[in-house]
Length: 423
Image (cartoon, rainbow, N blue to C red):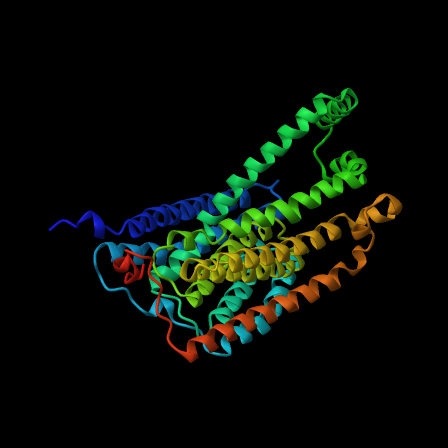
């Protein structure tokens, strides 16, 4: 007998189609990059750094494809009406995440030694690259979801993979649209000012006839970065617009489950998984581009950004489901703004660190938050400690509420059947 339209698992079909393509795409690209490494080995003029970068990018794609595979298989089982295995949602031991986090610095030290001293770094470094990125993210997920319900194994992997693929795709698309609007506004404004137009034309001519090196680009753009107005514009974009977009779209998978009667604890875990997937996508991409002596320090810094993504998305997921369940829309708005503020504060401090070398050149012309960039590392450390405390506190509060009495999923009026599903 054919399925009735009311019971057709459209989300499972979409999950299978999207992530099956993701598996194939990742592994095909990984094979092409691996082939490029082998070709580079036969090229006497190839740089070891180039081969190492290609090698770790290939490893990252293999790892990403492997992470998309469980979601693909589970969705197929759901479509075929087969029972879903429970083993894929098993939890780590109570102390395993902490042990892994304690061993993580050793992974970074070993990987950094290989990257800077081993002639076989193109072959040996990729596993350390994957572990260096994945361990802190996995540890935070296990710590954050300890003792909390997360739904079926299909939902677990679906939310994680959606955060890893669909969320970043939507964020990039919206951010590019916002950038296009901003550039259009600047062009319109510059067109009304002949001096600005002439200055932009001179800059483009210098870019065209100059070699695109870091030193050249720094020399051309440094005078503009020294202008407080430009710095404030950069700050508004990176610490304002970007967090607003990302915190709304990272938990996109939860938006698809709006009518599935999730509990606040499930929303928290769903946001946690969405943020973890997004963090993994970003960190795999960023850390694959600097395989040399900066790899360990960059991976360490990315772990802080990963924490921001994970904790902020977990809070948004909690607030989002609470709004659907109990109509607490004001509470969700407050939680969303708190998450955006946390994310924006982290980005603002990172901007200060990024442009702090300009202080020695023109200290008096820079905004105050840039002039005090020397305290930025301490501020980041304090914020990171506060985020870990917030993650542990939220987990403890949700477990306490579960212990007080079992949560019955709230079901939207007239949709009782959907509330019983567990996709």
